[in-house]
Image (cartoon, rainbow, N blue to C red; front, side):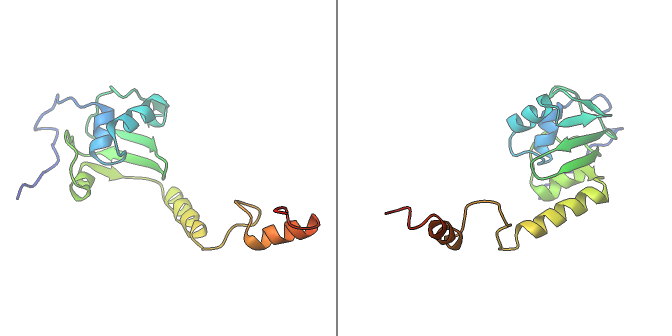
Length: 142
């Protein structure tokens, strides 16, 4: 069984790895091209500034990454060149996302999966359709 350990500073001080490849390898993005697109669109920031996909990643740097699911704040703890399973990938970064962001996501998820349609959003139900038809004076299918 191979165990992959994070690369420490003393091991390879001048090792180079592109930001898009790193974000793909630690599984924040499903494909490397999605990671690259996010960088180009300004959704990945280092010290408040947008990063290019070709920026080199170094240990102890902090990045702000916006994905479809959430806004991440990560700290690089190791360099990872190849994509590995999730349980191994999480060893190469620290998730330092503020608690407010995590709570916001949990609240959104809780309200989204209630099983009931939010009022005045989405398609009308059968009952709404019948009420509309009755109001308009008969069935629209006639």
